[in-house]
Amino acid sequence: MNKTLYSISMVSIISLIFLVYGCDLDIDLPGFGDYSNYSTPTTGTIAGIVTFVGTSPDRIGEIRVSIFDKLDENRNPIGKPCHQSKPFIQFTGKVKYELEGISFGTYEVTAVTYKKPDSLSDTPLIIMGIYGCSPSGDVQPDPFTIGPETVYYLGGIDITADYNAIKNDN
Image (cartoon, rainbow, N blue to C red):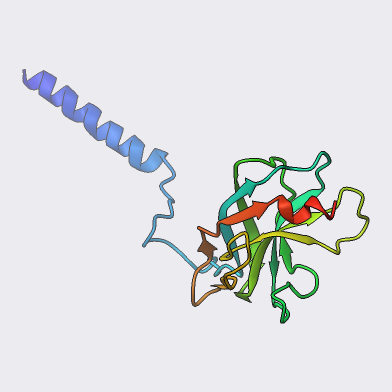
């Protein structure tokens, strides 16, 4: 019995030695290690769901989520978008999106925009829906702020995109 206990002890000690010296235990765990190479993010991300309503046209142009800095007096976005998502590949129902690389700041308008199928330029974009507005447009858009003093990731930026907005324009 002593011989068995001795053998088990030796195997345990040798295993522990191999574990400690044989493995590279240089692991960065939260709260431990060197953070000198850590950098604060310089851009943010928004995400949400676009809900498509209405009947889509026979030919679909390019649909994206677009972010604009300002609105004019008629509540239309001013100028070109400062950030845009990749074009959508699904055009019905509810579609998740994520828009990365947003420069820190406050943005007045987040909208679903439509570019006609044969349009060669980026403008004019047709607004299909705006974050914080009802499809009839009777509510002021909801601005958002993203940045180091606020948040780097902002979800719940949900927008209803109405095909009736492009019905007579396509």
